[in-house]
Image (tube, rainbow, N blue to C red; front, top):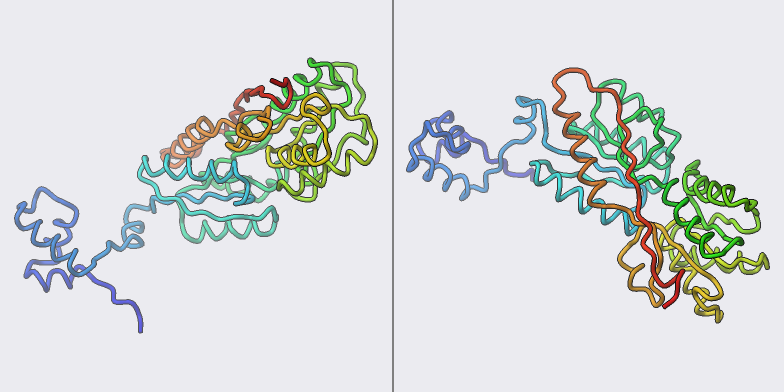
Length: 338
């Protein structure tokens, strides 16, 4: 049996008013007397009436919905960003639809097309690759409002994001300033062509006159604590003289930290560790973790505002604008001790 759809005519039949009067009353029109509005609205509630949003969108040409594409729903920082975006959009009168690409390029294209078919007013996207953006550029060039949440300055698409290159540079520079020269790197983003953190790390080493040693870098098998634990074990097995470590996410760093605890290494005396994102667990780890802060509030505020500006653009979309947010390094006991 199909769903029972309550129409304006059903409310009109129940109350004895015309369909036009019912429609105006349900929109709180001052043209309808308050007592009449009250009767009609009570009848609508009794019948479980819901406005036909599809019909409304055909008239207004907007659905008041935004699509948000994530790469990995299990990533703590993306979950935090998703919640912040949903709340910020709700303040602006928009609902949020979520989808995850699971770091798969084909799936990313599929969910973007799904959102287009649902006629969302715009999209906020964490792309799998910061460089494989042709499918997204085509949408932007066709006048579709969208904002990326990670991108290079030359992306050719609107973006608001933390400057990952600068964040990794600050982290590596901090370790160098503490006297470290054998600095390891666990970073899985490079496998997808996202080299910003690696480039920041290499820049800091180069400026300090320290050569990049491949024996000190590794791409983990995933992004979880377990992946960080495994990557740390492999780095340690190489016997590379590593005294400090930069991890591409806090989850990877916490996995490495757990490995040191299991194998009797003191942090930071034997190994200093820096993470990236400043998730809640970083500050409250057994050894509080130095981390590059992901400015969730600032990213959310600027990205949502830019998207709404694009949606409300009267004619052609303005030229793409990329905003890189300078990250802060939060120094804790994993690098400087107690």
